[in-house]
Image (cartoon, rainbow, N blue to C red; front, side, top):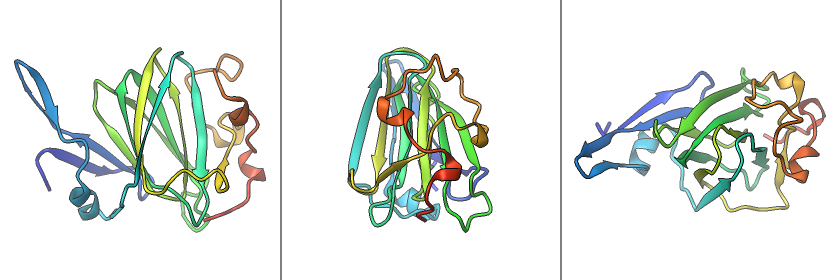
Length: 187
């Protein structure tokens, strides 16, 4: 494994924490953000096809929990280029021992950490600062016909969000997503 990147398996199998090393000097720093070979060596050979970028103006903005169903399911590699988020991945794989469980982790421009989320997970995040930028790679193209979601504030999920539902900035579409118990199983 490259000394430039540390990859750690998180509590739910398939979810990886990726910490690129920063090489600093008087000019600033250099870091390797993505290395296809290292991800394949970690057991996740993924061909990413699209990079996405979001800017959330307000602290307390929630995006998600989103996923795409087969045959257009997506793996994601998520990082923050400015600000901070609480990133959440929810296991939707019925055959998994961690089905219905989630991990949450703070990602920030400062800590430089990234999360690899394999297909079969719903993903979302909440901004912890104003003007937060999130960049993520996906393994398949966006397809509105296969796009699905789970209500981010579903109390049965027991996700400890850093914002109360009535204070969150949420899209109209995300506010109407189904509860986990009402969603269809797709994976």
